[in-house]
Structure formats: structure tokens, C-alpha cells
Image (cartoon, rainbow, N blue to C red; front, top):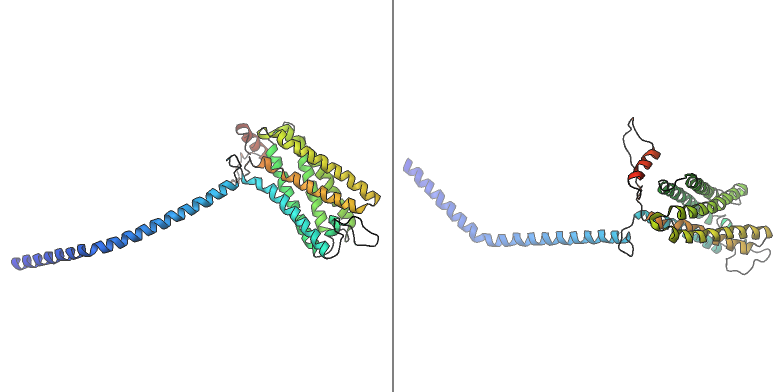
Length: 314
């Protein structure tokens, strides 16, 4: 029995050795196929990694300046506000011109009995232009409110006397509220509320421009106070001149020139808000949500504590 078991064992070992030799003979082909598939997978991973890296570099370049420094993506918020609000208002103007609701701005003078003058409020008075006008003004009011809050937070650790910063916040919030009145109450439906909205938007908007110009020169963020403040002072002076001329021409009944001044006034205001991108490019704004605690610091105390250690970020 033992001999038979040894013989069987020897036969099985011999068959295993032969099977291993046959596998070794067939292995090179299988090994090469597996190597080719591994190489292909590795190449695909390399190409995918390269594509992702290029996309990340593209996003990084979009937030970088000409000198190679990376800037905050918050700089695009004022620019988006300026571009899209101005584009929306001009869309309202062209819709009203196509519907023969107003006279084009390039007409030399308005003859008696002709179409209405091209004021922004008149251009957005009747549908479908009024629908676009309401949407544009509501979105603009919301973005002005966001810009006002962010600008207030940005300057809070930098100013010694907070009354100027608070005054700017109140002025911008009042101008934002006036924009909602302009967009939601057309001049033909409720002229009194519409005129109140016009006064709030232009009056407090002009005041906010002067306050922000003074704050820019006073705080001198990143040593760019004069570089940014002087253009803001020039824009504020132009806005003030346009406001004065607008009401004078309105009182004298020179509506074509008054409407042109109004369009120039609005474009200057939008350009002024767009200049906030100069300071926003250096700052990052975050919203922090934490669990309530008994020793929870107030918002002002946390900002003051943060500014004590790191004055360049809020």
C-alpha cells in the first residue's frame, strides 16, 4: 500500500511539473497582454491627470494678475454687477426703441407730439421691457446690498472712527432699497413711489460714492489708496455734476438732454461700484457656522480679535 501511494504521489508531482512547464510556455503571451493593458491604463491615467492639471491652472490664471500674483475670486463680484446691470439696462432701452415706446438717444431733438423721451424709467414702463427692467433692478439691488455688507466688513478693522464706515453702509442700503422701488413700481402705475425710489437711488448713491472715496484715501489698503482713490474722486465728481445737471434740465423741460445725462449718470454709478474689485482682489470672505456655546463671542468681538493678529484678511 505504501508503494502504491508513493507511486501515485510521484505521478501527480510529475503531472504538476508538466502543467507548470506548459503554463510557462504560454505565459509570455498572457504576460505581454497584461503589460499592454497596464501600459494603456497608465497612459489614460497620465492623460487624465494632465487634463485636470491644465484645468486647475486655467482657473488659477483667471484669478491671477499680470504680475503672476494670485487674487481672490471675490474681485469678480463687483465686475459682474457692473457688466450685467449695464447690459440689462441697455437691453431694456433697445426693447423700448423696437416697440416704438421711446425716442432713440441719438435723435437731435424731440418734436412736440412725438414719442416719449428715452428716460430709463420710461423705457422700462411698459411690457415686455418692464419685465426685464424689474428683474434687472431687483438683482442689482441685491448685489448692491451684498457689496455694501462686504465693503463694511472689509473696512471695519482698518478705520479708527466707525461712523464713516457705518454711514457708507446706511447710504448703500438706502440706495439698494430705492432700486427695488424703481423696479417694482413703474412710473405709470405709481409715480410718487417711483420718484421716491429715484431720489433714494441717486441721492444716497452719490453720497455713498463720496464716502467711499474718502475711506479709500483714508485707509490706504495695500498702499493703493491714491491709485484707487483718485479715480473714485473723479467718478464721484462726475456723478455729482450729472445729478445737478439732470435736475436742472428736468426743471427746464429739456428732456432729451436730461435723458442723456441720466444714462451717463447711471453708467458712472455702475463703474464706481465696479472699482470695488481693486480691493476685493486682496481679500477672502468666509461665512463660519459653529455650534452655540455659552462663551460665544459677538460678531464685532471676533472681527476685532481677528484683525489684531491678521490685519490683511477678514
